[in-house]
Length: 244
Image 1 (tube, rainbow, N blue to C red):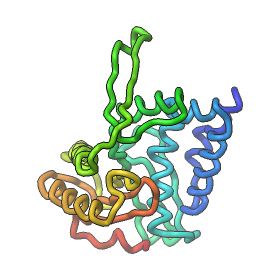
Image 2: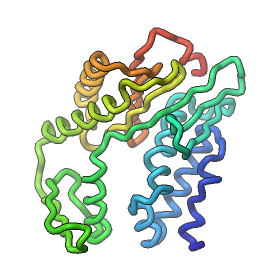
Image 3: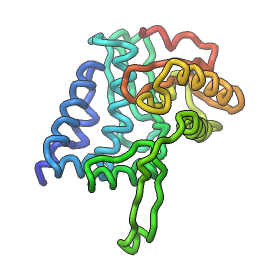
Image 4: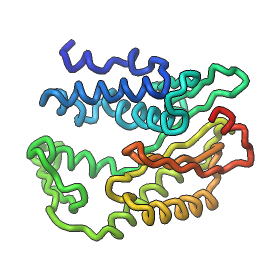
């Protein structure tokens, strides 16, 4: 087992922690991975464990910390298995039902992978420039190019809204329970960085939810920075906020 392999191990990734402890643990792992070029390559590789760390465990911690802060009577347990939730939140007060958190990351996963290739090769990449490729990856001759150009913000936001819609629709027409929460992670660095952007986002998500059968107690919009949290209730039940 290499030193990189020891940084992330599933048994430690699924350990129960308070929201504060979970966020601190995630920060320690991302810092450890960033210390070497090998660690950076592993973090950007799309391998299962770093992908779970970034796309599921980190958002779980950010969501729980945003809602419950430094409370020690709240416990978070990531779930890396194939069940239909990514983490569970329990309370020392057993009269409060557990909350099951399903996380979906509203991003262009394919585009992100291509940008990461450029970032790994060149040390920098344009975050909004158009992507083009030539050749095929299977042949080993694929070339990726990202335009170093200005892209109109409304165009960037429009593409991001469409991805948000796709992620929510993908979770529709499935059976969950009232104590399941859908956390949609959005880009509040670029696409939804202003209050106006977020107001547009909220109204758009409400319109999407109104037109699909979404079987969650809540839909929560979470900024990938951890600095934005907005809850949109989809059921009449109010018990979900008992643990707040």
